[in-house]
Image (cartoon, rainbow, N blue to C red):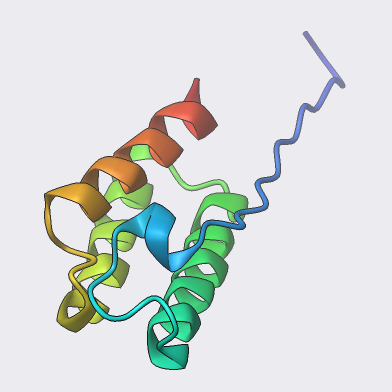
Length: 88
């Protein structure tokens, strides 16, 4: 349809537990990692890349936080759900 634009934005508020990050529940570094991951992934998705571009960029973000286990199967699964929800 001409002259119709649909935009989509995402806001992510997942906790370190939601991401299944390593560490103690009261570790502020773990909480900061979750916050930073949320912000970076939001930015990627809100730039409206293709699904493939988003997957590559988000994979790199998870890798940045691999010390917290973000690139383990649980974090990859959460990221995959975000990507599926956003692009569906």
